[in-house]
Amino acid sequence: MATYYSNQYQDAFVDVPADMIRPGDVSGEVKAMYCDFTVPGTAPSNGDIYYLGKIPKGARVLNIVLAFPDLGTAGTVHVGYLQDAAAVETTDNDAFLASVDVNTAADTVSMADQSNMVGLGKLFSAECTLTLTVSAAWTAVAGTVKVIMYYRTI
Image 1 (tube, rainbow, N blue to C red):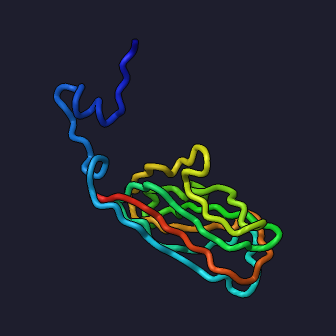
Image 2: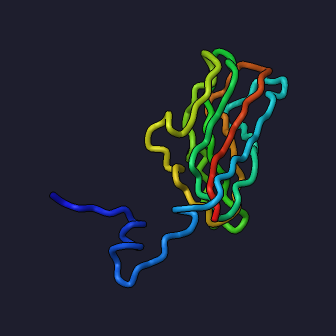
């Protein structure tokens, strides 16, 4: 039977000399950034971007939750982030949620509902802007969309 270690276990308990586990990986304060917006009276088009909030440098993403009403007969969105001013982080508009169907019915979706989300556990080396990008136009002209990002800092 083989034995395998996480990177953190390897660093702290197997390697000699041991490396310190980053404090935010085993402890730290969990924070929640809440954002909402109301559809501005016209149906959003493909490529429209909603700026939701600032992801702080040093944040490790634990989860993103998106809640929305039925937004019409068509439409999908991504949730991700923009490149920072110094280009330390690269834009990834669907790092957290990809092609979420916002039509058909009201729903709440989290990263755990999607497969292989690259943003799970993402550690930000610079402050970035959290975004919601319309990836296929929706038809609704009213409604409130809510986003909560859970992250941990040192």
